[in-house]
Structure formats: structure tokens, C-alpha cells
Image (cartoon, rainbow, N blue to C red; front, side):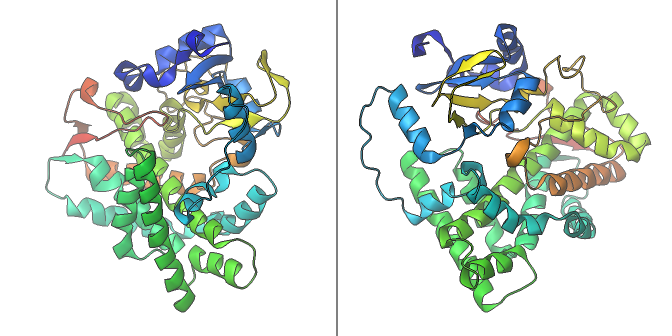
Length: 407
């Protein structure tokens, strides 16, 4: 199928960003796996729930960067790949992480960083999470209007992950600034942002070499310096990924959650009346308004069939958790926000070996944030009409701001 015959997702415009779900529903009418365009590349987009779960756990779909480059070149009709330039250290930091790796490297690095995300360690953070939330809400006490993202949803996970990792508090605002910049700069600027991020992370590494502590960064430094279990680029990349992948999705889990609840006040009142429903509400938020709508691409290592689609060797396959979570084959009335509905097996945090490592930590922060907001405010409502809320760019659907009226 040629590029001229496929729909190009990046050209769908503001209506798609505002509400992509009707578009996903139209795609599903064509099948659970459909041919679309992402930039210049035709890909198989997985929009059906069953096919999405299968794709996310299928070892025939790989992240191998060399294979991806060859597949992209073949798609573009390039016979001979140019000799790639050696990656700068900053480019290695941006790319040498779990989401771009297959086993055994993926297994090795996930085992190392997984030590920081044991349930015991995460539960031990809950009092500190609640303390940070209290301090952030105290800072806006007395205000009747606020942007929830700036007041709470952004700073909370940055502070929590900073403590988990061992990142100096003074450096956290600069890190957040650079991570946000990655979403809005072109390829040339991105290279410089990567170098700046790498330089910043290396200052933290040097700090933990001279001042070790009981944190993940110290463990990773030891794994590099004493055990030779990861390269310096992998070390820096793991720190970058834990911080960036941890604060973005958690921020928007909180933002999307409060946005959904204020637009469904009867659901908010149910949670207000019964706080035991908070965990279920967080899972429903992750299903109903999934942050990552388009997952990172994989490439087929061999031909096979997926959801009735003939996947050829070196075809690109991209899963849409946002579409899959709204598939009527997964849940009846999927476009209805219902905190008492079934959320078992939803794909809001991924699935398979690339399931989000920080899921439990993110959910605990969202639960604590929702609880604190309901405890503090009797009234929580949008300060602007719902149709005026703006979302950031594809492939993640993120609120730009969430102005609330509280009291």
C-alpha cells in the first residue's frame, strides 16, 4: 500500500488532538490492525484491544535499531544505507534506554533499575508523597483559581523521583525544563538538548561517586564503577529515562484524572463519599484518557499475522493504547467514564516486557493527589469551558494546562 493511499496521522489536525476517539472508532471499523502513515513511513497501527495486547508481548516485534534503520531505508527506496555518524554522548543518553532495547540488554538494565521500584520501597515513599502534596497545596492556599498542572501535577513526581534517584533538589527544575524542551524542538535543537541533559546527569553521577547515599543513583554508579554491569551512557540514560518517563506520565495521570472527574461530577461525588474508590478511579482514568496514545514503534523480525493483517518482515508495527482501551470488544460502553467499570488488563501503563516500570509509584502519587484535593476543597470545577482545554502534540495526548476554580 503506497503512502498516497494511507491516512497520515500527523496531518489530522486540531480536531484529532482535541478528541481522537471518534477517529479511532472509524479505524476499528476497518479492522483491529490498519495501515496508516506516520510521517513518510507506512505502518501497521494496532487499534483493537486483543491485537494490541498480543503485539505488546510478541517477541517477533523487536526494537533493534539497526533493523529499524534498514527497514526505514527499504521503505524509502534507499538501496545502500549511509555509514552512520558516531553518536554523541548526548544522543546515546537519549536512545540507550529500555524502550529502545530487546533482551538480553533490556533484561539486564530492567533488573538493575527495578531494585528502586519494589513495592516495599514504593510504599515506604507514601508518607513523603503525602507531605510533598501538602506543601504544594499549602503554597497555593487561599487562591480560588489555579492551574493544577503547574501547582501540583508537574512538581510532585519530579520531587518524588528526584528523592528516589538521588537527584539534587536544586537541579530538578532545570531537568524538567530540558525534558519539556524535547517535545517542542527540531532534530538539530534536540541534539543540543541531549548534550545539555547528558552534562546535567553526569554532574549527579560525579556527586554520588563522592557522596554515596541510599538511592538508585548510587546503586547504578556502583554497577558501572565496581561491577562493570552497564556503560556510562547506559547509566546516564537510565537516570534520564526514570526521571522523564516517571514525571511526564504521572503528571498527566493526575491532570487527566482531575479533568475527567470535574467533567463527570457524579463520579467525583462517588469518590468523595467513598475514598476506597480512589484506586479504581485512577485505573479508570488511565483507561479512559490514556496518556500515551501511540507507543514507540517495533519492527517485525519475521512475517506473521496480527489481527488478520499480514505483517511482512521489516514492517513497522505501532500499538495505540489510546485506541485499544476504547475498543468495545474490551469493554461495553468504552466511551463512558465509570469508576466502577471493569479496568482489568487495560493498557494505560503498557503490557509485556515494556510495561511501565514505575506504574505502582505513579498510581500511588495519583491516588494521594486525588485524596488530598478532595480533602482540601469542597468545590473543584473547571475555570474555563471544557472545549477550551488544549492538548499538546501527538503521540501523547497531554493537557497544556488545567485551570480550576476551587474552594
